[in-house]
Length: 430
Image (cartoon, helix red, strand yellow):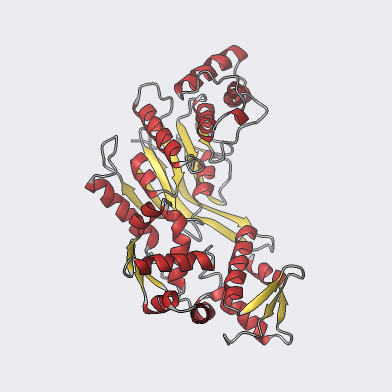
């Protein structure tokens, strides 16, 4: 079967503020075929949305090619339409006007635009709201407008960038089910769907194939075929087995890309997870309360969170050696048990020792302050260094996390007025 879309060794880099190259995608090759739904699944930093936008032709690859029906893209993909996470509606336009936008851009005559837009609005279940404005609609209804605006173009390929993540759980589930009903029906105007998600169950519910992306930079880690009949039963053993396998892939190390040990790593080789001290300490407490072991998928379900929401906390607790992660299982370590059962001051001392030894950026800041004559450094110094390996946003997040950890551990302090980080000389954590 010939490919609808061919992504051939695509890499994408951006230039950071310091002029250094920031690679987001690294040599990705994949095909999308007619009659299938493909999910792009990965953690933060895996470049899922960037890859989707290269397929849409909205971002040009730095190297490699994207081809639509054999023709290399040199601009927007003529066979694709996109649904965004944030709805991206024009608030001053009615539902019908929003749906007609793409048709107007293509020069479709007014009468035909109206007819096609009304048909798409009816298909997606919004008839009666043609004259409403976005502010009058719920989140689920706004996303329906986004679907109608994409489907009215009758694209070969429907691209969806986390289209359900901004919705409440019940609305998202209802919209997913309706999308699957449309997909299997005779009136659905598109031949293939590619959806970006961080929700593992969503990927198994929707997709015929799941492409798992690794991070920093984004690369294709695994391809999993979902050979289950629709509608899919979350309670079936086959469904659960696929979900567990994908959890293992997302939480486990890649065999060909071993991470350096925290004590030896640089701040760019082992970035700090976006986790607060309170958040990671809370996770360690929960695992301790469950007898020192917890199943990550079950824990996420009990807490009514997505696993992707918990992964930064898991990564942070593992980085500090408070938890050991094996597949989807979390195990409390001896130092983790000491940390969560000690009194406040002793717990802070344990955290300080682990952060100083095992959190590379915290260690780097502490050593820089100790080496300086006055024990103080402008925070901008570290931001500039971090921007050589991270985007501006990620560099800021890295430093914010390090400051949060360092202040709690009394390893250093930060003054927002002067934007300076200073050695905490009153601390006993030396």
